[in-house]
Image (cartoon, rainbow over all chains, first blue to last red; front, side, top):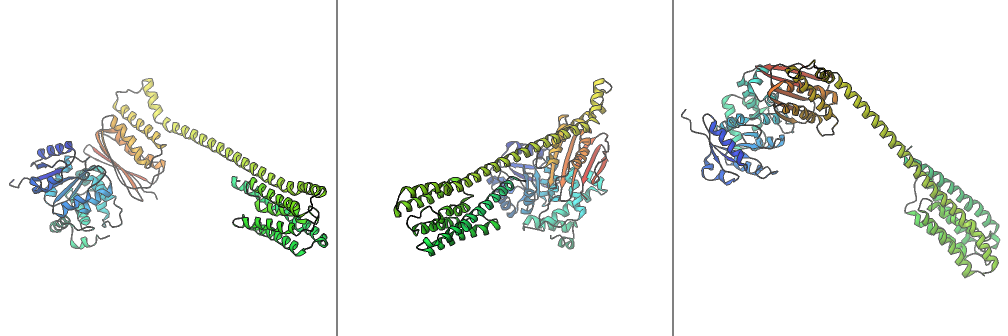
Length: 222
Length: 365
């Protein structure tokens, strides 16, 4: 394929995590070019890191203090961010999505989710890992978008099984339809809350791809 | 009856009795003496003013008794009124009449003080009695002729004037002590009863737990012991894993934790973990705590699937305000379908190419 190599920059204070992610990226087919910025945020803004397609961002460079401010700055300057966090709570996950991160993964989720997440983010698409799917299914905040029962069912099943083939077989739909339902949910989330360029890009793509219609989108407001 | 009720009832009885005694002493006996000795008084108006002052204090107490209210800010004023009335009466007493029936207030004033100070500490009432006594003595020594007869009258009069209200105060203090003692005894009895009930409940629970295990675990152990079950048999191994998980769950059920369902699931998952199955456990959302029977149905589905898992299992819980579902996805070669004991639990099993997906959902009706 003539497609250009995807590059990603990782900011994480744990050397083992960065080394692990590097290994996954090297093993991916096609491989992903990884720049290790260590725990220095400057590495994302300058040099090679500034040109990377995707930022893999450890939300807690300072333990106990999720850096939402930096995430917002990255998104506002047009960066495509995959949040890779040891934080597993719903509020944090949904907040990252609301700020405009394209993917949110917990560190328990390995290459089977991180690699597709980086690829999706490089194209400006969202990736919803099972942990985020569970967070969205269990979201009961008052300003959440309105999801259809089927969408919630798919989110829950994806969270429970961590296998799209299994979800598809259980719900008697195709794996592609599973993806469509999940993508629709992400579009609905992108259309509420804070405005961000990554979010509008996500919506535009979804409308272009016919994942959701404008009329449906207008009905999602809480 | 609670401690406070016991005490309140005793105190109220004493308060009413003291008021009746005070009214009899001031308004009946005192009035008789005042009227009889009226011809001796130089300033009858002053005596009647003192009489009115004491009556006012008693009337106030009567109102407070009826309304079941204690003396509050008025207490100091009432005592000042009683002592003021005493001073007024003594100072206007005709010469040589101290501690006689003409000195009607000498025996009455302390009772008016008693109704005001009955619920105060003993020493405060004693201080009042002494003050009044000193007032009367000072009056005798300063303004009257001090002779043997006057001193004898004062001394003998003081026996009843000082002694009777003092006796009343002693009774009040003793009754207060008895009430506290009775309350403490009642409390101890209650504690003993609670401990007894807790012990018998614990025993019942233990007996019930044993009964619950005896149906499944005991035959297994007996079979292993008499050699009729072979430890190398995979079916026996699976049964052992299931029973071990059940026991762990049983022990976990009595733990006091914020989220018992998750806590029990963690214990079930640990058993699978011990036999080398890689278990992921994740939970999302918040749910109301299901009762023990429902939790058993939910975890039973999970533990049977976990017991048969080959190498990996994913256990997830998704909850909302009106439902909670426990999912186990694992590589089980074969599986049994547990039948829930509670009506609100629904179990669904889906098998696909060596992977089993078991979902137990509780939706309280």
